[in-house]
Image (cartoon, rainbow, N blue to C red):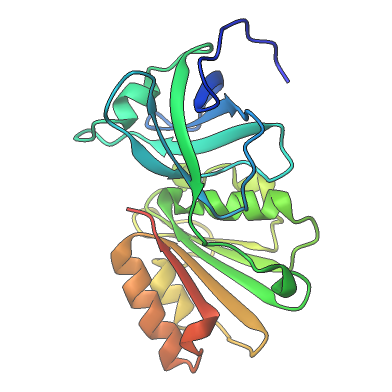
Amino acid sequence: MENIDKAVVSANDHIVMQVRFLTETAFILRLTRNDMQFRAGQHIIAGLKGEIDQREYSIYSGENDDYLEILVKEVKEGNISGKLKQCKRGDLLQVNGPFGSFGIEPYDLQTQKHIFIATGTGISPFHSMVRSYPGLNYTLLHGIRFISEAYEHDEYGPERYILCTSKEKIKNQRGRVTGFLTKFRVTNDMLFYLCGNGNMIYEVYHILTDKGVPSEKIISEVYF
């Protein structure tokens, strides 16, 4: 771990180690972990040290990483993301958590096919799961508007990552993730995990149940 010479006031104070920009508006904040224990899929509540405004962010890093990462997209009318975008190495964030039960149950890790369905930065918990569980049998459907929003897609197996763009044409055009899912073959050994826009989750839930997927095999996390 990088050595950052700055006093930490409490266990909830996490030091910014790195800011990694993926696009003009999307970036990853790497923070000191401070021995935080979490399950892949959980989220934290974070904001600048000393300020009231805080927001929930799914953890992007893996359970075994010695740092904590979150994926942030700047929202122009938001109170938090613009401030986080200005963070520099050595700044302090106040972090609470982890929270939530979204994730893969241990008894399902080796016995099920895990179908991850995300829109935008809703890919965060799935990035954490893939990093945390080597050899995981998964397929990731990522719905975005533009190719530039395929955040660090090369970290997933090319045969496991399915990109669906709604505003930009690509080779083997797939369109919206919900449209692609209507043609997706479902089998009994699949579990479905949904994270992203609430409208997408609602639509995908009905697509899956119409295909005969029991509701208990659909796990969701409304991301924004």
